[in-house]
Image (cartoon, rainbow, N blue to C red):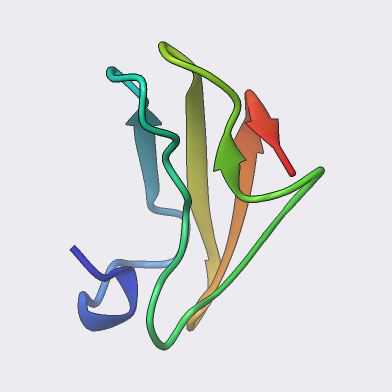
Length: 66
């Protein structure tokens, strides 16, 4: 799913879980996603949430890595 292609209302949140060994990278076509220290889930069973702040603007937080 590309978050830029779905009209989520401002304030929407999506929780992501990395269930396998392959690292999950958060990204979206047509949307800006900000997070620190980066936009990758750190390891298996890491959890992160993205929240829509404004049109095409999201923030990511949780167990992230660069």
